[in-house]
Length: 211
Picture 1 (tube, rainbow, N blue to C red):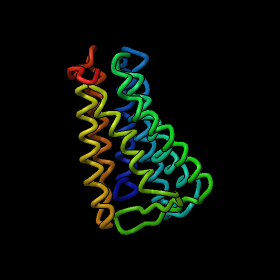
Picture 2: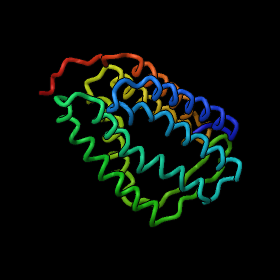
Picture 3: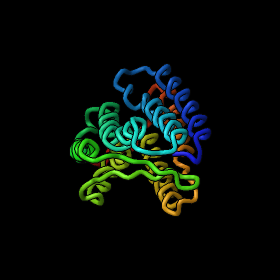
Picture 4: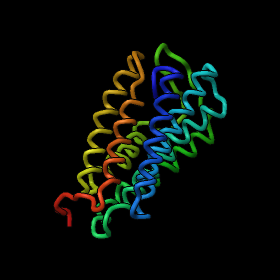
C-alpha cells in the first residue's frame, strides 16, 4: 500500500521492472516462484492505484487486491521458499507450508463469502473483509510467510524475512494511526533483495542446524 494513486502506480511499475530483471537472471527453474514475487507485488500496487482512482468501494479491483494480499501470498511465499531450498532443508518448512495452505483456504472462503470494501482515510486505504477468527488467521499468515523465510536456511531469504517482519510492524503502526501507508517502500526493498539473490549462482546458506 502507498499513500496515493500516483505513488502506488510509480512504485508498482518500478517493482514490476525489478521482477522482470529477477526472472531474466534465473539460472534454476525451481527459483521461478520467488523470482516472480516482485511481479506479483508490483501488480498488487498497480491494482491499488486503480482503487485510489475509483474512490475505494467494493469493485473488482478491491477484490483483486484482497485476493493477492491474503490467500495468494499466504500460499505463494511458503511454496516458493520450499521450491528454492535444497531437498535436505525442506523438512523444517513443513509447518509453514501447512499453515499457508490452511490459511489460504480460510482466507479464500472469507473473501468469497463476504464483500471486500476499501475506504480512503487520508493518506491510507482501509480495507474491510469479513473474516472469522482474524487473530488466528493473522498468526497463520505470519507463520506461512515470514516463518518460511526465516526457516529457509538461506542467508538472503533470512534477511528478507527480517526485512518483511520489521517492515510489516512499521507499516501496520503507521496504517493504524491513519497517518500514511508505506508498505510499497518495503515491497521495493524486498524486491531488490530478491534481485540480488538471483544474481548469485549458488545461494549462500546458513549452517544446517535443524537436521
